[in-house]
Length: 322
Length: 268
Ligand SMILES: Cc1cc2nc3c(=O)[nH]c(=O)nc-3n(C[C@H](O)[C@H](O)[C@H](O)COP(=O)(O)OP(=O)(O)OC[C@H]3O[C@@H](n4cnc5c(N)ncnc54)[C@H](O)[C@@H]3O)c2cc1C
Ligand SMILES: Nc1ncnc2c1ncn2[C@@H]1O[C@H](COP(=O)(O)O)[C@@H](O)[C@H]1O
Image (cartoon, rainbow over all chains, first blue to last red; front, side, top):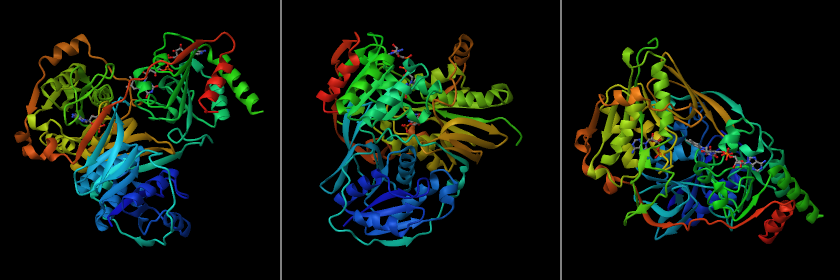
């Protein structure tokens, strides 16, 4: 069977596998023989977790350069491991690093690269990726025409499912030959960000996002998010004002989300904001200006003051839950 | 080298204006490039280049900022606008055979074009094109040109020949350092792009735009376009445009109405 490489980063975020990794492994198992390529150490727990998803082979490297330089050494690892197992495809997560590793590995493997896949299917032995383009106004089906396909896949592309029978993967340490220029951009400092304790924007079923209308006070937005188990998002006006971390920004230059429900609060709905949220299943908008463009795409819109509407909705939801 | 003059290439893409509806056309689902403009995200790349060269005495001191675009004849407009904003030179890679190139073929041709410009200190790109939105090109150019990759920079400093950039991720903020020459992509957090002024618009008329064909890049026609591309779009479907749903005006009970709506949608 054809080997399908799944890239797993154990350097940036070591420990248990991210849900997206389980999804990628599930996709890989449906398309061929999943091979995990791990940057960083592989302990018994990780090997067992990978085995539970049907991984037969793990290739990994703990070379220090993987952590010391930006992106490029990891791309060298992925490309060399994929070549070593004659992979027909490489699957990665769709974060900025995942996409960039995909791009570089594509050059090294002379492989077609597709990013932002929302689903991947096997058609006559080839992988076909589906994605949204032009800020969600089109969906396209695309494939690599090269011997190897490199695809970065968004969260929730597939429901993660362990293999019917767990395997005991063979763990092989490999030694990567880094290209000289791969060791050029050194990470001199890394400052962790404080975790919010809320779901991650791209994984969340519900997102509550606040804009300039919150006027510095994300309290009502956060309370609404917490009662719904939602992630908190923001417009660029709100992140630029420093009211919330830039990593909460939704839009053209922020996160692109498509949750079941997006509640837009005190956001006018500029084109760049819409680019990150208009593929959401249901959109609710709360804005005091009836002329706001956000109302053109809202399934349910409330013209009103967010400081009145949100607390009342939170109370009502709590009341109904008893 | 103590803050000597810099030779910078800025990549500017000619993209359909995001303010209008955008379309894919034809059997191979290509971008309709009518009503196109210089990508607004590439204005940050240009600003980054101009700020660096301003700090070293500008064009008078021998600093060079070349705006480079690859695209159809009309894409020259992206270069022209860059010259008006302050780029010193312009290069337009244009060839029939390039139409329908994917990221891999595009980065191949852009890398070849950059190599014709002699020793370059920095290649600066936008964080993503507003039409392709992949952020593949910067990483592929870095790989093809053998330049250190400092991408998604939200700040950029060059001191002597040491380049320092900040990259904001979800898990951490990183400070990245490299020695010239480098490839950088900048985000919309990096700076505040300047506008062309009257003086710039007049000055741009005297600036030279070099047009390069594939042959001048030393590339055969089948290295690019559909023949040289490694991906293919099989099908494209326009999503039905979103329409407005129910809009209510709060008269004191809208919070309850919101809860009703969420309950009816089985979201709570
Ligand atoms: C290159 C570029 C990239 C960009 N990328 C992004 C991006 O990724 N994401 C993004 O969001 N933006 C982005 N922008 C910015 C975008 O163009 C808008 O400026 C921004 O989205 C506006 O944010 P806002 O809606 O919060 O603010 P505003 O447009 O000022 O709207 C605030 C809204 O709040 C409402 N309001 C005020 N008070 C209340 C109240 N008490 N109750 C209810 N409603 C109230 C007002 O009626 C108004 O509609 C980008 C811009 C550029 C140039
Ligand atoms: N055809 C092109 N001509 C010039 N620059 C380009 C072109 N395509 C991409 N770029 C540059 O690469 C960046 C990222 O583009 P992309 O990888 O398409 O998202 C853009 O912001 C541009 O700076």
